[in-house]
Image (tube, rainbow, N blue to C red):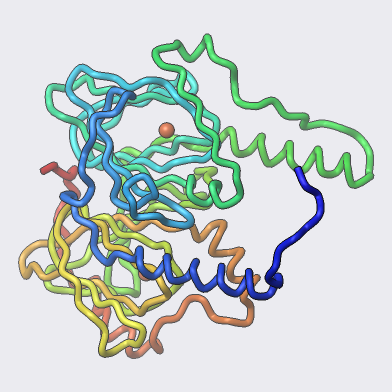
Length: 355
Ligand SMILES: [Fe+2]
Ligand SMILES: [Fe+2]
């Protein structure tokens, strides 16, 4: 390996070209609405069928998270595997189970799970209908740092496999090394004791000033210890909308039930309207102003939103301070857009169905 740097062009020009190309690629890859038809399912050696809503392996590269769909035929189960990234699961149809580091969790439509990094996991379908879930993982973000690692152990039993990487949690001393060992150890300790499952039956949606009613699905507020990906669900009243706002992507909305449209624009006016329906993924990137509307005059619409506010977005906030990264209209305009959610008669919460 030569150790002497011998480029003919300056650091400045290399960097400038590279950065321009990077942004150009990002803009070219942008999607507004990704439909289930776009996420073509493929048989996989894992034993499940897998499709990509957004992610490099479906030729729609992303930077922080990816969104995949997995389908399980009745009576089948996948290989067991683990990886350096974590993933959020949202079940959209069927009844099945997931084993996480030897712990068996049964799930049904509308349930959410967390697959922690380095935890061995596999899923199966013990029902009579096809089961299907979506996963949202932090793999793209780890990939940007060269930290993506995946290990597939086929049909091995969890108890025969090595546990998560060992760590040293305890070392006395007030020097920087001992302090780092203890700090990193404490972090691992808490990361390995987070919650793994939210049942649909336990959800309780509450009205918000944005004109919707919402609940957390997977979030540190309810005991999860994830990479910063959080999942919440919101419901929009018949014919109503959520108030407009903007923030950096990647923020996605998976349409669980209903149909509507989203406004996306670089300004609060003059942008484009994008229709969506059940099964679609609404992609909110590029710091666009956006507003989501339920176009059904009789039924509510339910949407699961996924983003990485608890890690990446927090980091961006301090790195770009004093830029404001979350904007919404003044309160009187927001309230007018949102309407009064308490005037909506919300239907009982029923588990989603697929298709
Ligand atoms: Fe996995
Ligand atoms: Fe948003």
